[in-house]
Image (cartoon, rainbow, N blue to C red; front, side):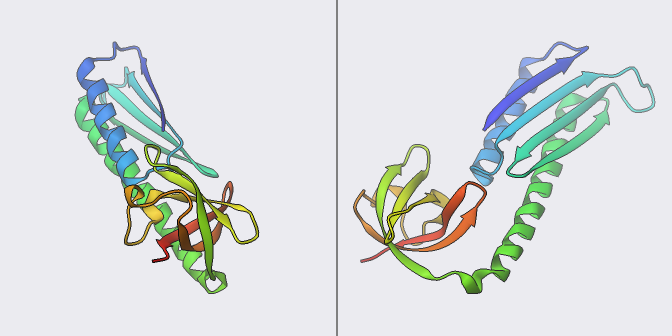
Length: 176
């Protein structure tokens, strides 16, 4: 995930940057590959009633953008609140997306393929289908196995769906 931090009318403090990095890591852990870009903006405002700071999180996800804005007196609690709200919004979008996918599961058929490429440090790989197409899969789609237990050339069963960037496996299980 690409991260950009902006500070307007205020000097970016090390503690704020550390908090942003911690929250980013949580997003990467819980939403690997879903959030493509995150921009965090911290602005000192002159509006006395609304507090001294405004925090904006702008997250780019496939086919959409999620924006969260919070205003208040202290930056760290605002960052925590804004990231919590962003997390909830991402979970809700994924829930709706899964609901739509479940409605089309009847079309999904188990397929057999061979692992062509593994990138365990980036948590993804590619399967070659029986008709010689590349099918992307993420580590989160693995069932009863982890990336370290797989090798290139292994036969696998998988469920194929069509993602934003082409065919991908919704689940992958080795043939033993």
